[in-house]
Amino acid sequence: MTDSLYQYWQALGWPLCRLLLGMAFGLLAANVLEALRWTSRLARLSAPLARAAHLREVAGASFALAFVSPAGANGLLSECHRRGELDRRELMLANLFNSLPAYLVHTPTIFLLTWPVLGFPAVIYVGLTLAAAALRTAFTVFLGRCLLPPAPAGAAISGTDAPTGGAALIEALRKAWRRFTRRLPRLVLFTVPVYILMYLLQRHGFFAAAEAWLGRHLDWLPMIKPQALGIILLHLAAELGAALGAAGSALQAGGLAPQDVVMALMVGNILSTPMRAIRHQLPSYAGFYRPELALRLILANQGLRALSMALMAALYYVFAVR
Image (cartoon, rainbow, N blue to C red; front, side):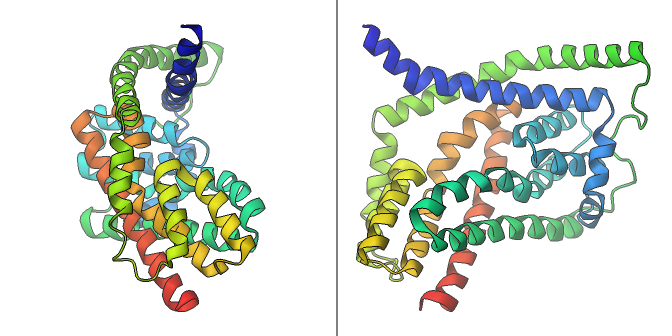
């Protein structure tokens, strides 16, 4: 009984607690930034890019915050949308606008995982995925210019002066805490059941069956050598770590060239997009946004991600593999 409870804690309890703590910190940070009226200062860091995209200052603040905390950036956007300061179209574009900083947060971890196993091919793989993230942000700037009118200066920032004096500062922090405590129950209420559902689906073989189906239908990928299929399947089934192990083994044994390994990792990354969206993004987005809106944001985010990765993979295949 004790072993069973410990296994559930390791597989479900602790990962869920980490997710909730990260999301709660992001939500609290967003409320503190707004209460102290530091969003304008953050917005100045990315003001030229946000203005080019016809996005409001709060989108620029979210972009700057995403370099430190993607969860905090989502918390800031969700708060502004809830108060009616961002409509749905602006919210969608602001979320896509954060593609580059949100990916840069994870880039050091990905590089430190891939470099010891792959060596120089890790530089190519990380460079391609980083270029895809930059492309998504650039495309969002283009979409914003096409779909949105120029945003008025200072739009969506309530107040411009930070509170001064001890009493004003304490009152601002109390206001942030009150907002945080009002939103926290909703965050937990939506995140926990969605995460548990994802856990049960995985435990009872739903994701394994979907991954096996994808594995049986990879014949339409002529650019992938048969020896590289194992890397793709492991990327689908067990995330990046297991795929890297297989890639490193094939590379060291001479069974695959570096270009083939990079292509296999890129294809595995693209094909794992639906599973990644359901497993990882849905529980966290459901805590910040209404379920229907969360699904729309995830579909747009992951759809654009897959398209940008496919474009970079195609360019790499044409210029480096074929």
